[in-house]
Length: 195
Image 1 (cartoon, rainbow, N blue to C red):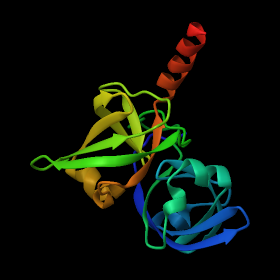
Image 2 (image 1 turned 60 degrees about the vertical axis):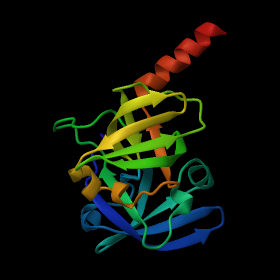
Image 3 (image 1 turned 180 degrees about the horizontal axis):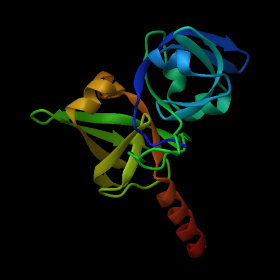
């Protein structure tokens, strides 16, 4: 379980294909604090730490993960939003984030707004957003500003822009989305009532 509050930016330093799996070596300050078998969100995707050495660690993505997320597009040098799992003895700063990416989306526009930024995204999956509801973009807990059918926008403050991968996004960038878990349950329940 995560909150969507990004702790650090890591960087991909090596990629190794192993059959249908891909191993990613990530350099991060928090690496020395990690342990094998620990869950860690990478751009919102929960992956298990399988190896740790000094300031680097390794995670493995299986075919399902590579198919459903934007992780398969990572290259050496790619910056990655990192968040360790939520501790149960502190404040809950973001929203409920499972680290299970629902789909990818495309950044359709970015508008600078005199010190902040509006990012616009479009997706194909059968999920919904609601105005002022929660959304997780590359693991970052955000509030939906505008919500249309398969399109939405979020606004980013300077701190979030500088301390996450938002500063690297461009029009056409592919990102990971996790929709609000409560909204997903409600949507599924309502669809069962219709049938």
